[in-house]
Image (cartoon, rainbow, N blue to C red; front, side, top):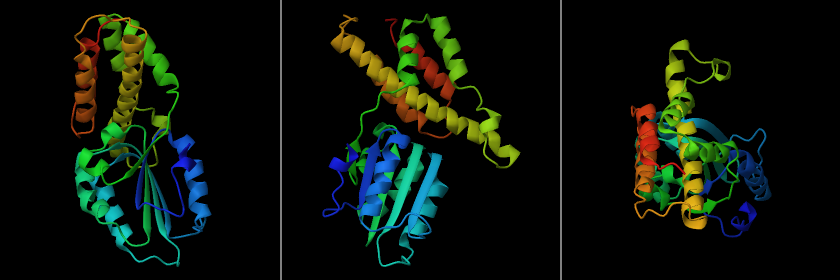
Amino acid sequence: MIKDHLDKNNLHHAYLIEGKKEDILPPVVEFIESIGVKIEGNPDFNQITLDSFKIDDARNLKSQSIEKGISKNKKVFVISVNNFLIEAQNTLLKMFEEPIDNTIFFLIVPDTAIILPTLLSRFYLIKIKSDGGDELKQAEEFLKMSLNDRILFVKDLVKKADEDNFPAQAEEDFEAFSQESNRSKAIKFLNALEVVLHKKIFVEKLYLNEDTDFFNQILKVRVYLSQPGSSIKSLMESVALAIPKL
């Protein structure tokens, strides 16, 4: 439970919470209100929700964080992202290393593996268990597939985002939006795949081969997916090739 980690008498300047945003956000907001910070109509409460957090977002956050608060209460930033680009993380290292007076950050991510160890060390880490939903079911089926079916699955996984869900932005931004959305989908799927693999190999003992280097491949691909310009399709196909059929 998130509430077990949040103590209004012993506040940390920055919390990193791993899990589903829809599960985490309500108790976080409730806690923020419990320390006297208003949510509605309060310029000192900032909620940022992005698919991918880029370097421009990091610069904007730094600028907002150093602005003097309007109320006497704390300034609070709640940031929910699916992916956090490495350049953006590096931009924020110093800011999180030296706490800003009267300011608290809550960063919500689906998987802390996307966070650099140097940045991770600056947060109070909270991990919330999740059932994984559809991703776990997909991972179960993926492990049973032939190589050809896995390649087709990857192709479908990284297809362009549905235009009906595209935000009201310039048409030329659609390609970038699509790519970032697909990176998020790929990372979520890798997380679920790793969970299912651990269960089948180390609990159910369905794989007796001592070679489990494919776990390292998943780790590498997850890191590369956080880098702009990397080929999502090629990276995910490398995972399809590396993992045995179970």
